Image (cartoon, one colour):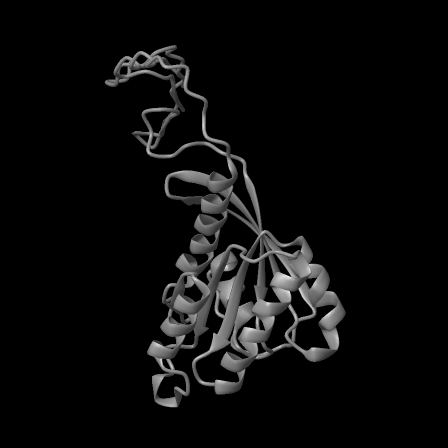
Length: 233
């Protein structure tokens, strides 16, 4: 049974609708809520050598399952709706092939992507060396000096087999001026966070591109406390 209710929060342009489910009330507040409703889509591309765990990271994020067996990817696309820093985001993730024979396709992926996850395995020095080539390819493909990217050292749960130190990853990220983190799709270590960090980098770039608002020499009146509107479902 549906019935109106009165929220405790004072709202401007108050519109609300209540629905009781299992004795709990689901509340969505547009300005007073911690979540800002936004339908922005983010095109993320996951790059790296074959076997570093790119698909495992993506599938863990999207389905919360761990991909045990290695099956070389050519091109797989996934979507997931998430909330990042209290803002809705639709992740459009492209999981790519790392093999050299797909170089032409890689160039196309790089041109289309807005943000990049550059993944190597901490158990393989060669994949760490290769990741530098991927970064250079991205900059050439997009004809830019800087793009939103995050450097990811995957398989950090296999520490006994480590070939790339944490310090080496940090140093390379500092050289590139991008975030860095070690992850494990198997153990759910920073698996979600690495994708979220790419979105944050895209948002930073977008904010930097926006022109500064013109000042007319007058100050705007402060908004009244409790402004906005709310909807209660």
